[in-house]
Image (cartoon, rainbow, N blue to C red; front, side):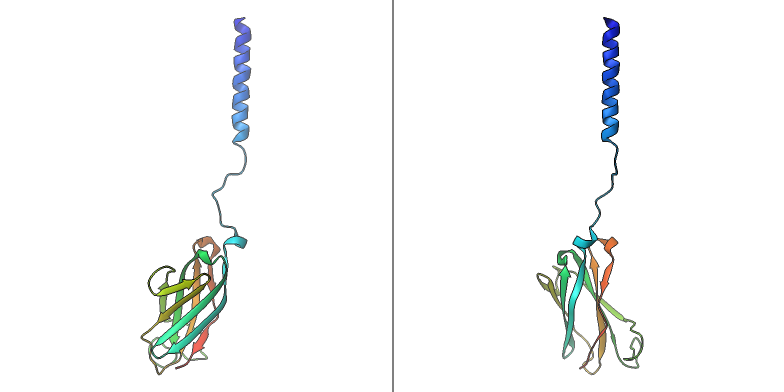
Length: 150
C-alpha cells in the first residue's frame, strides 16, 4: 500500500513539473511599439514672419499623441558667423526645443503652433522642424528646409 502511494506521488510530482515547464515555454519579450500604430509624419509645416518673430504651424498625421518634442532648427542667410547662403548646405546654427503641453507651444489635436522671436528683421532665415517620438526606437521625423523672408 505504501508503495502505491509513493508511485502516485511521484507521477503527480512529475506531472506538475512537466505542466509548469510547458507553460513557461514561449517567446517572452518586453512590449515594443508597433511602427504602424505609433509613428507620425508631418502633413504640413508652414512658417510666417511677423517682424522679429517666426511663427511655425506643424500639422501631424498619425499618432500625434506620441510627439515627445518638436525642435525648430534655423539659420540666418548672410555673411556673419553662423550664417549661411541660400545655395549653401543647410547647417542649423540655432536649435530651439518645444515640448507639447509646456509654455511656448500650443496644440489643437494634431496641430502644433510655436514661435521664435528675436530674429533680425532684415535677414532671411532657413528653417526645418524635427519631431521626436516618445518611443525612441521609432526615430525622428524631419521636415524639408523652408525659407522665410522679411
